[in-house]
Length: 85
Image (cartoon, rainbow, N blue to C red; front, side):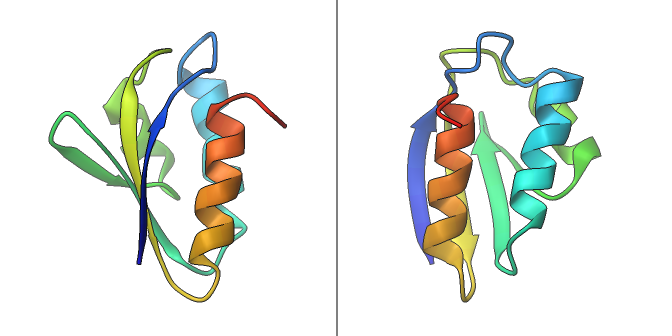
């Protein structure tokens, strides 16, 4: 299992379109991936779950992945959230 605290650096935060893009990034991986913020823990592959987090730029979230490609999954999610694609 890999866990990493990441600060959201997307200027618009995770509104509908950026949240959908993050779900697409997460869905590329076999690992189970969860995001946790302010005592909410959601499946990163669920658009409805992602929308409930209401993440804005500057918020810190915990990204957790477990599975065969967990390290790559966390790394790519971090790249997306830091707007480094």
